[in-house]
Amino acid sequence: MLDSKKNRIILIASAAIIIILVAFAVLRDTSQEASLQQVKSLIAEQKIEHIVQSDGYFYIKTPTGLYRIALTQVSPELLESYAVEVDKESSYLVYIVFVLIVLGLLSYAGRYWMKQQHGEEGEAMPFASLQNKDESSQVITPVESDVTFDDIGGIADVKQELQEIIEFLRNPSRFKSFGARMPRGVLLVGPPGVGKTMIAKAVAAEAGVPFYYQSAASFVQIYVGMGAKRVHELFSAAKNNSPSIIFIDEIDAVGKERDGNRSDEREATLNQLLTEMDGFEDSSGVIVVAATNKIDVLDAALLRAGRFDRRIFVELPTPVERKAIINTYLSKVPHSLNVDEIVQMSVGFNGASLAALVNEAALMALREHEMQVKMDHFYAVKDKVAYGKKKLSILSKQQKQFRARYLAGKAALAYAYGLPFEKVMLSSETIKPQIDAPMIQSEIEAHIKVLLGGMAACDIHFNEHASNVQNDLKQAKKMALEMVDLYGMGNGVVASEQEDVAILDSLYQDAKSRLSQFEPALISIEEVLMRKESITKDQIGELMADVL
Image (cartoon, rainbow, N blue to C red; front, side):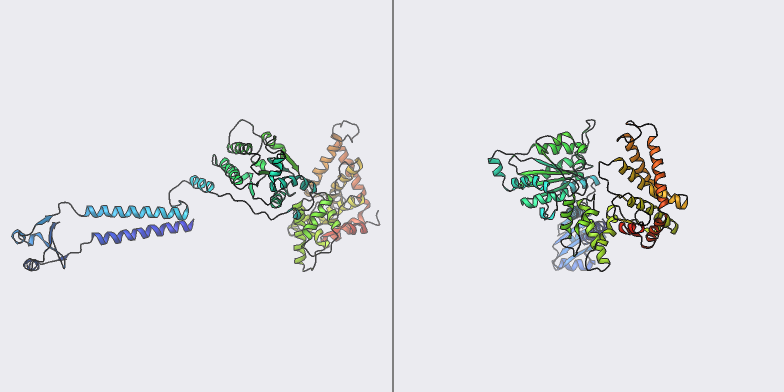
């Protein structure tokens, strides 16, 4: 913006200087003042070519120059042998018209130059017009896909589903000759981070066809009609380069169910998308792949036959798939790790989280100048990847003591009840043992006791607890309510009033009573946390051996 303003100022200044120079050259009087004796000499020598009377002067044109002499100095008889031309109108009018023409030409040249350099920025166009021009002039080009199925671990069932799509894109005539029709649209459904975009790219790379990527949110413009236009341009580009793949990420941003009460830009864009998919011919060679994690909010018209015919659910990876994914990311990382141990500690991780876990562990190993990535590095960065790391520097000594006691109480109960966890870190108050549904009543009660264990431990030691119990207490209340309302685990099949409160109070007293027996171990666990800011499950087991 600053460069544009500077260029405009330079252009205007240059034009003004040129106009001044031209006007000076044209308007200035170049004639020489002549005396009466000089005029008589010119007449005698017959050197006068032309005489013009204008503005109180005789202008005498000779081969050697132009001279002027005042009318009052010359008698009429002296010039009677010459045809004197009288200039009745001022010549300045002609000069002014000339200057205006020059000014207009310079203005036009300047405007043309600004159009070429700044896309009509030199014109006083409204901002919205500039935006529309920029948006509409975008050229849609395919994205180079360098991802193959070999780069994606696990998802064997998804790969099998998509293999037919790849074969169709490679050899559509084979399917056509057999009378088979491939789906026009494939909808990938799954939680964030499971690799839906990578899967679509892998399909394009395996089939060797152009890959057109577009986020659905980019279709929804604030200018009427622009979203629909971009949809049309996207499909036109894909058809012109068929066979090809169109991938629409987060399609729920534009494909939400229509309520029929309004007609906004989003609905116009959705209508255009539906129209384009209806316009596909079986031989077009274009397949639309879309991704969403909210299939329940999509408009029914998108999901009907002839549009997104095939739905593929991409779930969180199983242990076998996690192992394959981790091996893929570890292939370029120096290590001598037991991958099964990483698999066990990464329950609930998606593909993106596993990639981040391996990367963060490798970065930590580099920071510590290690030759290989070790298991300790994975334990150290796990919470950072899963929950985000909290800075301990903002905690006072008293706050750190409360947190250490809080974590010691939860960790001791989790170990005593045999709930799975790997490590406890002072940088995170979260201890989330794996919950495998369905659970029996005693397992649910054990989880609730662990959630209440931190509060109980602080109450035993400090006779008070801190506000950090909020999240754990909220989760404990939820689980107790589900026990009596959903699972029929109260005094009767149908829950009675405040029965969940009674369960919580009872379980809290049980947790407090159990932790009172663990006091020596709690002190030891707390000391390790204060000193090293972390403690493993095995270390907790050693400290609790005498109290269990």
